[in-house]
Image (cartoon, rainbow, N blue to C red):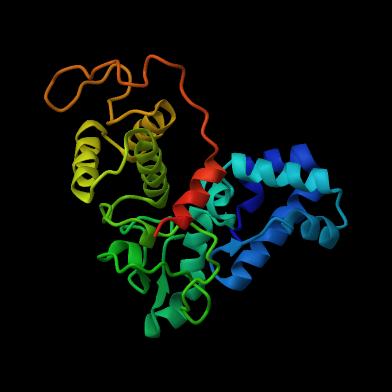
Length: 265
């Protein structure tokens, strides 16, 4: 644990809002995560177990967990898609904890790794930085393949994303292509790659790329368009209307979409 743990603004807000219960719950979760490695995957019954183990009201436990996710003490995107608890900070501390033993025996990590290639120590071997092999690995102490079968796997997609794409952007693209196929019919790998190239030409950073993809998904767009006030790569303003843009943006059931992604292939 960092020596300035209690000086962190987020921790101060956590304690102010939820008192000792909030602090105990957060430390309890950190212990569970570091016991397994750098992340912990939970299920639908997790909140009941959390409440019982800590002798805490279930609603309060849920409130604290939502606070931790909303303040990025845990990565909210991974939790919503895969029920995985981790964060970039947790993974940085994990690297420090395994540094000595991992120098001799490098540790393999996979799709739940949030740190960039530059932030990752040489003794951490991340499959996301290599050519995609079709498998999704996670740290288990023995580098075994993750067998939960509940997460969205890249093997369900027949093309290769840019290796610099973070997991959140890849999941956003998975959902976009699923919605696009539902609206316009099958799309080939070549078309997908062309759309990805177009996306990279109009977005300047990861946050913007994700926003563009999510906007296209919710609007049912056939292609990607720059965010408001931006221009496409050829200097022309993007078209403001598409087949679906005359209507209000659609509300898609993300759980249903993710289930369909799992069933594909």
